[in-house]
Image 1 (cartoon, rainbow, N blue to C red):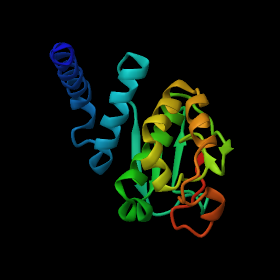
Image 2: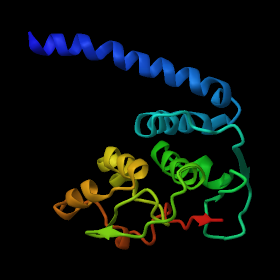
Image 3: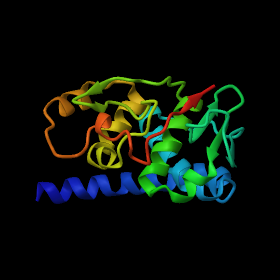
Length: 187
C-alpha cells in the first residue's frame, strides 16, 4: 500500500519535469540541429536535473565537417564562440551511444566548462571528459554514473565501482585498434 501511495505521489512530478524539459528545448532543438537534436535535448534534461536551470544554448552552432585540423579528432569545441564541429564521416557510422558520448563531451566543454579528465581506474576512464572515446560497452554499463560525474565533477562514485569491476569488457588500453578510438580537441 505504501508503495502505491509513493508511486501516485512521484508520477505527477516526473511527468511535469518531462513537460518542462520539452517546452524548454522545443524552441532550439526541434530541427535546428538535425540529427544532433535528440542528444541536445537529453543533455538539457540532465542539465535541468543537476543544475536546476535552463541550458543557455541560444548561441550554439554545430557544424558537420569533412575534416578537422587535428586528423585524429572526431569533434571539437570552441568554448568562447560555442561552436562545435563534428567529423561527418564519424557521425554517419557512429552508434547512438557513441553519438551521445561525443555530443555530451563537446557540450560539457561549452556549457559546463569541463576540461579533459585523463584518470583511469582499472584501465577504464572515470569521465566522459576523457580525451579519447570511452568504449561503448563501458558507457552502456556505467551511463548513469558517467552522467552524474559529468554534471557534478565528482568521480568518487564511479571510481569506487570501477575499482571493484572485473568483467571481460575490454579495457581502454586493449582497444587501441578499436575504430571508435579518437582524440578530442578542445580549443
